[in-house]
Amino acid sequence: MSSNFSSSFMNEAFLLAEKAYEALEVPVGCVLVYKDEIVGRGYNDVNRTKNPTRHAEMVAYDELREWCKLKNLKLEDIANLLELYVTLEPCIMCASAVTQLGIGKIIFAASNERFGGIHSVSNISNYGLTKNSFLIYSNVDEERSISLLRKFYDRENTKAPEEKRKLKKEQ
Image 1 (cartoon, rainbow, N blue to C red):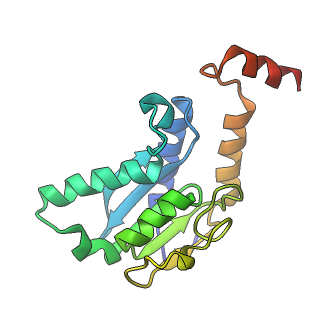
Image 2: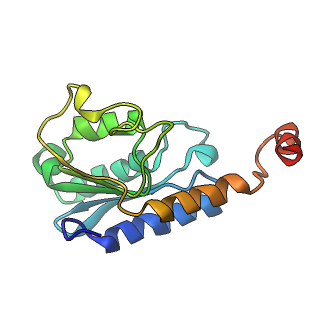
């Protein structure tokens, strides 16, 4: 990994992705970092909450907001100093939130060819919502991310309807 970002923060994001995997969620993990301190953590929590917006980035963002309240800081005052570490390129919804927040650095482990909102499907710079310039580091641990996603999609989802599970077994 480059010296422009921290492998330990990406490792923390992967630990959270593993928690998502264990919870039968799509294994994506995320940390938000301010001045070398993790101020927000999250992993996908869509199935448990039955809320399609509970992506890792959104969960971490909620934790960040609480941290800002505790520290009497305004999010808009620190946003450009924040670093987002995530195990998969943020989807279009999450990428839009990142640009609206004005996060200064985005580091993701692998591109998301189906839903990626940074550069794969949509391009973050086209949103017209950017508050400031930002740095992007992409595909910094692609093999690890893809391996975890494959492991997730290869196993049987016991929460899926029985007819869907049978269909997968027959394929």
